[in-house]
Length: 543
Ligand code: VG1
Ligand code: CO
Image (cartoon, rainbow, N blue to C red; front, side, top):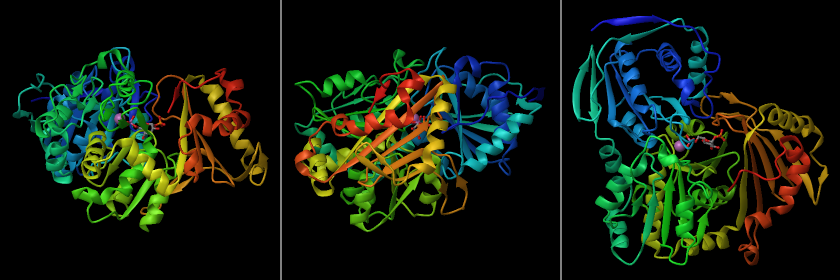
């Protein structure tokens, strides 16, 4: 089979963001755009020849043609074998599972996660390394450097590979194996959780619903909940992955998962509801008329971990991203284990997990996971909750309010201002940065500033430093506000404002978070001039 070497010229916008390269589909469809990024990835790697690559995506528009291109390029670049999910489908956590299980040198995951899909939607490519996790910054910057000087790429001339039939075919020197996208992942879940107990729970009068938002988890959720665990047919809704996610935003939050939210906040709500995102790494957990904040979910999973077979021996430590609420810190303190604070993005947990410094970690953005793979894992979190519910025989709301009673409540909210003018967003951040050194010790509203900085992280394992990770203003009473710009959006800029306060008094735990955080919300606008600079008088999404 002939290997072609094609001349190309660099694009100037291929810098990977929070998790990989995300752009609108028409950008990815430009001649050589995908090819440049894929070749730059191979160019930046050493010693992969003859080894195994994992390849799959969340099924969004452009998934299949991208897979065909990548397969032909992998063959031309000397990859020994590529494992592809059937139909081109692999959830992000399932891809991570396969990389680990089959000792692959890495994987390419095609997804723009929670961003909308379709011909005018978003697409993305992410490279994961041999531990199954997102490439660390030194790898993504090497890829980026290559994109700036690329002059040619390699591809074999061949017919498209049949992605729908399980089994092996040959593409030049490379073997392509189309694998069941669900089986290995489902096996891993069965090893971690007490499927017998969960089956028992689902057999009784307990009711649940799982909204896959027409994204990648549909086939996984049906196999695991309905087939393996005996949940009744129809438990999984929107379970067919669609190229445009049915026109929706595959983002499991209170705004974009509106159908599920309506069901769970109705008079006939089931006991438990959950949703996951485009590529299956995020989760939203709801009880009957009750929303579980993701930061609380992380804390609660850590506090209840020993109820779950896979974690019965306890946790080596925990970690959370910097903007995530400090609820899990309190659990760690009680368990007498370490709690690490990392920048936003799952890649920062990789070294800590590999070194067994932590067992469980999470982000406020509906991401929770553990050392079972090296990605956050939506269905894992849902199973974790089901296992806890099966053990404790209480409602979601009872479990959460009991948790607050024990640890106090960290009121928490994230306000997103999506699609704001990039120049204005940068001006806002610069304005904040210019105030940082003057703030400590100053009164602000009813608060006194304790510290103000632009978060910098030194990886405790490899010593690498990541700075400018978000502006934190902490107050003497433990409250904080954090400002950062999204690294995953594709249109304009997205400003994220994270707010947190701590309430030990049980009598005040039932307050609405927006009420409890009101003084901080007002103050954040004063300090950052959000309304004046963005022209927005309210956020696009409040979580
Ligand atoms: C967002 C979240 C971050 C998450 C990232 C990838 O990043 O805030 O916590 O790791 O998305 O998640 P940003 O830079 O937009 O704030 V996923 O599910 O899109 O891979
Ligand atoms: Co995702």
